[in-house]
Length: 338
Ligand SMILES: CC(C)(COP(=O)(O)OP(=O)(O)OC[C@H]1O[C@@H](n2cnc3c(N)ncnc32)[C@H](O)[C@@H]1OP(=O)(O)O)[C@@H](O)C(=O)NCCC(=O)NCCS
Image (cartoon, rainbow, N blue to C red; front, side, top):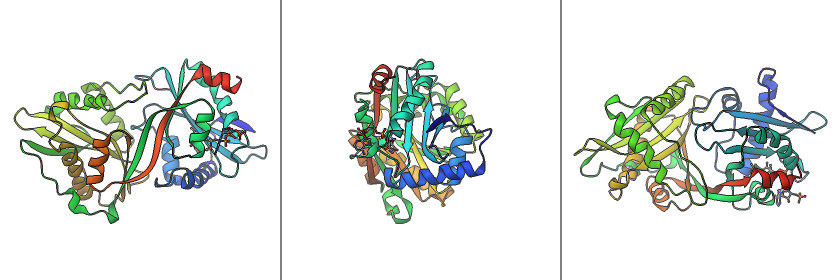
């Protein structure tokens, strides 16, 4: 068995095709309800910087003694917030599980995590509900610190009348793709930081601290990678302040899929139906400008009942449970005998 960092400089089209096929096979079982990886999305994931990712990803491959691909891993080290944490994700091919490959893979990755000075490993969005990933994580001493729910909105079958949501009295709805209008930047920045109020449960997760400069950098990075980064907001008319926002991204490799990023309403403006209004505004704009989108996917903390209900009210249905699992690096090393 060999576990090695993926080297894009020597990778061939056949390598990417094999990775895409293996991941599609696994995701059909492990991530029911999510779109399957394709060659295009795999190439984009592995060769382009993803502006929605929280850190640059390092990819790892596992091959058996005959050179056959049997596993895929991702390790990343966030540099601004969550600098104690390494994000690690491992996938072992169907039919090759419970042979110890996942454990050996983790042992191979651990020195890079330790060398980066990280004290905590986090596996994000692991399917729960008794999945292989959940059982493996628990066996290795990881704890689910942020149980969540994935919901999807299936555009071909949704009742679009659910999006006929007017702006609540005293607010107007607005939206854009790309860069925020300069005149809104100050209050838009305040609204972006309202995401820090969302339930964090047992996790020490640090939200990004937004500044106008950082928002501009983020917008530029979406644009540079050809991603359609779309925002809908509610503006409080009496003050001109941004009261809430919701953001999604559509990647060039999968124009039929939209991924929800953050949604937040400032505390003082909660209770007026703004969450529903901005999400409905987003869907109306998305359909007018990107009618090819067939599915929108979102993940929400399991105890965020308000957001989950808002999503139901505009046509999302529940796809599966998932969660962020965390373990201290020292505990993991001890468990692995490293
Ligand atoms: C999680 C995953 C990588 C584990 O790979 P693996 O090669 O099967 O893992 P291992 O063989 O090293 O398993 C180690 C131990 O974890 C536990 N374990 C793993 N899968 C389990 C399952 N389905 N049920 C119960 N226990 C399980 C067992 O204790 C196992 O030891 P044992 O087989 O001697 O009893 C694999 O199941 C997978 O790819 N799942 C989908 C992706 C995913 O959810 N990844 C999340 C982790 S980031």
